[in-house]
Length: 511
Ligand SMILES: [Zn+2]
Ligand SMILES: [Zn+2]
Image (cartoon, rainbow, N blue to C red; front, side, top):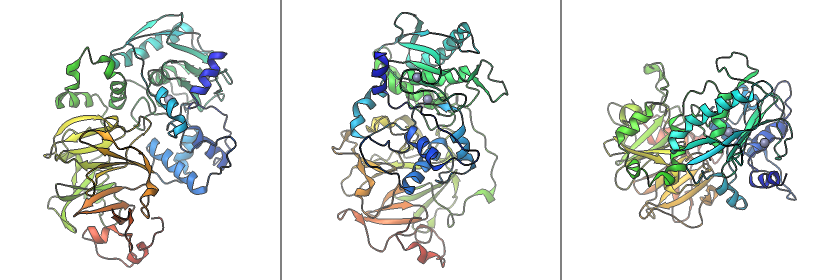
């Protein structure tokens, strides 16, 4: 019992309160509970009067949709309702980042500090014999072992990882919810307990068509990831995606990168050459990843630059790069599209993994290299657009709980690199690689600039922010947007005719 109490304090990131759904659309309360449970809304603290505004809930829904890979509408549409009801892991998607949780976060994010890890299976489920569970668990551990250089040994006395089937309230403060929805949760090192909800009908055949049957192997591989220290990933094809999906056959590059991030330091003495990875190795690894095939789109599918939002805009080699869906445009100056564009960005950035379907975060380093961020990873290209290396955003000293960066730019004002995540930003010195003190700061520190921003650029000495169809010019000295902004992006940056709606944009309302 004592252990459970300790676990409860350490791991408030796993919450399992029962949520009741109505027949059709979920109630406001159940939406709010889902969002707080998985970290999309801050948790109410005892004794503090705190209400969630409509806007906060909408923003939470938007974040949840983004993480799941749905269009971020902020609306509770059909697809979103499906997600609320889908089987999933009980661990939070977004880990708390407020200061009082700092120590907790650190504990949540470490790997094991050894390479031989013991485990034990306490019991079988009502539908799966213990021996079958053991066999599947062994197969699941074998999926992860090579990527951390780990060895797993079955050891029933004081195992590092203990696997058990439990139901409802089972003593750790995170009761399961009966059949459906939350199917399992696991605790990170140094405890590594894995709990599977015994109210699920556990099966061992991933081809089983029955929706009521939950594939034990698929869930076990995911929970092992947590027991090894990984958090949830917003990469849909990854094993660490929080929603249940079958079949699980192998790890995604994102899972592998996460493992390397956690275990590379303890492996260093054995394979120092591994850090000197060549582009070739990077590419052969990404070829493990299932390619998502898209029907060849014809001209009609190219978005109209004048009537669209933009995934992002960046200044690279003194030119304006615009990204939308799989396409990119390059402009030599405002309104001057270079010949041959739009092109598919995959035809330009050679070596970028094919599963990256959009470019939302990109910047040019002082040395001319171009860096594309996606999820918690980055890919760095030469000035001739050849892949040089890839890595994780932790190399920019971004905390482990940040799921992705939304914009990155180097300020002309102080030469520092600004790393933006939705509502917060960090200020980073690339030489030497140091984070400035006092960061992250809230985006609201940049007065009259909306957030989250889609793009932040420096063009001819001025800083500009883009969001939706509009942009703002920033006064670095006054730390606020200039008067007379926002203005419509299309008519000012791209060769688009002014429209009667133009005046509509000259307001500070939301886009
Ligand atoms: Zn999980
Ligand atoms: Zn539990």
